Length: 60
Image (cartoon, one colour):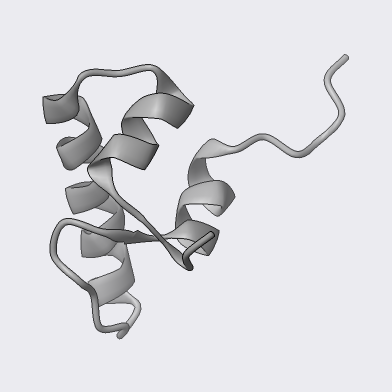
């Protein structure tokens, strides 16, 4: 799998519509830009996405 996620990937992971997937990508890319990283419009770093949206911790 690629190091970047597309809107379709985000849709499938979060079970959201296309517009929401693009909104998520824009927000994460804004954060990355503020941290000094270069971004690719319409794609998001998989590691940044997982940091913010994928819960790896133990529940309960």
